[in-house]
Image 1 (cartoon, one colour):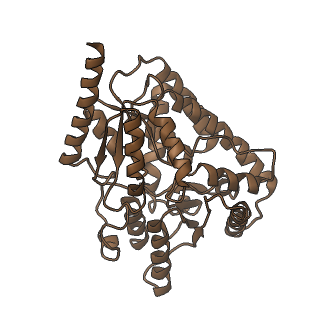
Image 2 (image 1 turned 180 degrees about the horizontal axis):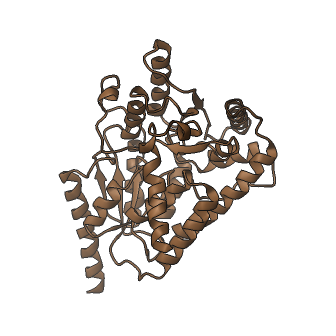
Image 3 (image 1 turned 60 degrees about the horizontal axis):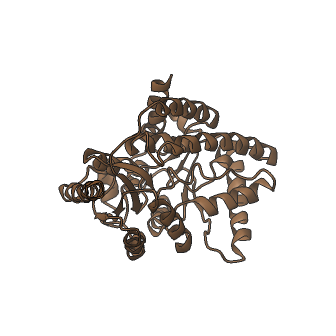
Length: 379
């Protein structure tokens, strides 16, 4: 059961986006999201299944013909490629959360393609959830979340009730609890590598919650019996990743990514959605507070990173060419690492592609420094 659980959860993360366009009937019940910061409880309450766009090491000739180079991460190029080649024509809706400049630009491009009649697209929705701390923000976010419920209700042909949402919130909270138990095996003395853990945690977004809770519990049983990993523990920060390319590169040099700053693995679990208040308000508050995006307040990001730095041996900072936000945090990251005497390295390649030779060399140098420091302490 445990081996099957690992394989099934990994497939639940890796396969859904690539499978779009193969089965028109299944696509009709699918809502595609450009980044995991949209309340999946509402999507499921409407009877749809969420599927996330992902960066892939696959060519995107149609998207490359219309998108400027160096401005859009691989996941958005793959999303536009799927749209322009007809793979999204049968899905119920495409939701683009306004989580970064590139996501918003992608939304505008898609609407322009639709206006020009260049391609058949499903309804393309913008979800504008603010993450700032202003006094007017909670009311604004609740209104945007309520509007999303109304749009999805219209697409489903029935009204999503508070009771519908309460059922999905309870089921998703159970899945979150399972994800937290799985994530705990990465902390302290990790028993699971980053490349193994990332897809298992990220499957939370696409796997039905009851199924996820059962499979994650089986995965926890499988990993708990392992001996702790002994390699250097690495925190992966910078531009949030949506795949395991950098995890594998770090693993190839003897390290283990024991945590990363990514909505795929962090915001999915997090704390439960409160059942004590109006479900729309609770969902708006949860996703504003926990989603890792370029709109996350700097002070919140700093606290999260500083807490994570305390439990690792090294920090890897992903700053690919398309990054337009997280590079501004690099000086603060340097300060955190310096205060704790933790080495760090900047990785400049596209995370969705195999690591460049230069990045592999940077990783090797980073981890060699950790080993040298350990040996010096023992000596």
